[in-house]
Length: 115
Image 1 (tube, rainbow, N blue to C red):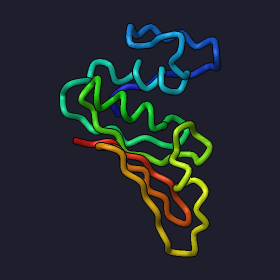
Image 2 (image 1 turned 90 degrees about the vertical axis):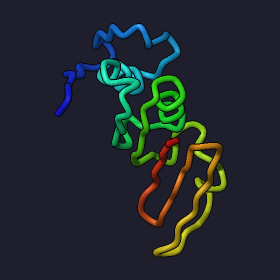
Image 3 (image 1 turned 30 degrees about the vertical axis):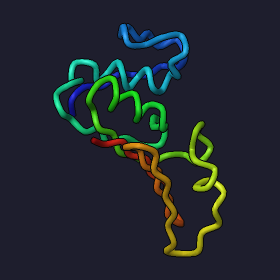
């Protein structure tokens, strides 16, 4: 384990200079914890509570950090074709945009951003 933060709700104080008023709280937690590791070639494996396509893009583009993880269907910017496709058991669908990919199987949805 690299680091941890006891999240006590919306009043949790996060002090990273990377966090703006527009940064979602879950993304802010990730940025706070990973800031000392940025630019070192690490890959973050993340669960669906924290992940989003925007966070994956920001980690890669601004901080040279790859990100792979599960993703909730109701997150912003999940491609409509992936979100709305009716899947049979064992079937998958995917969409790619530049270096970001969103993959969905009959049980899981993942996102990744890599170079």
